[in-house]
Image (tube, rainbow, N blue to C red; front, top):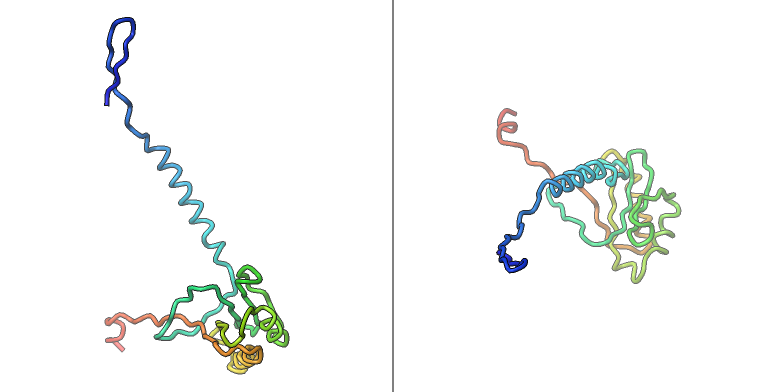
Length: 158
């Protein structure tokens, strides 16, 4: 693309500078990448729980209420609608009342996810399940991790 300009009877043709300087763009992208790499581990803080591994695992996509039991049998409630998705410690005796008050609509249609550490005794897990059922919630899902298939080389030697 060329431009013509008249300057006192003389015609002079100039070309437009169409090159984009990429260096500042690359600098900004690298700084943003560095910022995201440093802040990502901080954003994933929560209760450390080693959930059991199973073959059938579904992804959770909708807003949810999660009851977590850690290895020391402490119970936490994470309700996306009420406390912004943070794990709040809760007494097991107050769990039923808290679940009743946090729900909107029919409790039989609500979905609760129970996430328990694999080292938690069954008695503690059953107590939490009982508290959830006493709140009128019957749709309870247990959070697990997918089983990782072992390579053929490892299984052949055993």
